[in-house]
Image (cartoon, rainbow, N blue to C red; front, top):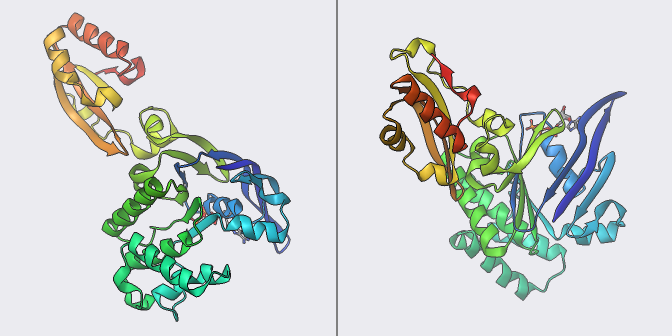
Length: 333
Ligand SMILES: Nc1ncnc2c1ncn2[C@@H]1O[C@H](COP(=O)(O)OP(=O)(O)OP(=O)(O)O)[C@@H](O)[C@H]1O
C-alpha cells in the first residue's frame, strides 16, 4: 500500500522558488493499478519520485508497504526501495550491456549468487516475452522491447510495488497497448500494485482501476475510473468527453435534446427502444460513443426525442427516474 499525506514540494533554484506539489494526499490499495493524470508541468514526475524518495518532499508523509520512508536511515531506505520497482519513459538501460546483464544488475547489487541470478534472469525474460533476446544489446531492440527489459529489471528483486514514470509515452499506439497489457497481466499474475503517471487519458482508460487528476501541483479529483467517467461534471468526464459538437443548427425536428451517460447495467439495456415502445416517442440519434473501460462499458449518447408533448415529458421523467439524465442535460430546442 502507498499512502501520501499532505505532500508539498518546493524546488529552490537560483534564489527562486517553484512550488511543484501542494498538499497532495492519495492512497493506493494493494493490487490496484492507480494512475495520476496531468498535463506537462502539473507535478507528476515530482509526485512519483516522492514515493521512493528519489525526491524528498518539503512537507508531508510517505508510507509505503507499512513503513514511514522519511524516518528510515539510509540502510533501511535502501532495503525499503527493493520493494518498490520503477520504470521510465526513456527506459534507462545500460547500452553497453546485454539484455540479460541489464536485468541481472539489481540482483548483482543485492549480492545474489551467480547461479540464482542466472535462473532469475531467465524467469524474468520469459515473463516479459524476451527469452530469445538475452544476449542482444539494447540498441538492437525496439522501443517496446526496451521497455520490457526495463520491466524485467524493475521486477528482479520481487517488488510488491511498481512505479511507472510515463513508461509508454515514447511508444507508438500499438506498442503502448501491448506494454499496457503486459503491465495488466503482471498486476493480476503477481498481485503487483502499480502507480503510474501519464498525460494520456488512453492509458488511464486502458489499465487503471483508480485515478487522481493533478493540476498545477494540486489533486483536483481522485476515485474509481469507471465511476468518474460515468459522472458528468467530474474532471475526468470533462477531460475525456468534450462537449458534443452537434449544435442547435442541427435542429430540424423541433424535439427535445437529451444527453445520456451510460455505464454499468445501463450500458447493456435497450434504452431507446424501451422509450419508443413505452411512450410512443422517437429517438433520433445525433452523436454518441460506447467503449470498454477495464471490465466495464462506459459511454454517452446525444439524441433528439420527438412525439406528443405529454409523451416526451413522460419519457424524460422515466429517464430521470432511471438516473440516466437530468433537467440540465435535456434542453428544449
Ligand atoms: N529539479 C527541479 N528544479 C526546479 N524546478 C523543477 C525541478 N523539477 C521540476 N521542477 C518544476 O516543478 C514543476 C513540476 O514539474 P514535474 O516535472 O514534476 O511535472 P510533470 O507533470 O512531470 O511534467 P512533464 O510531464 O513535462 O514531465 C514544473 O514547474 C517544473 O519546472
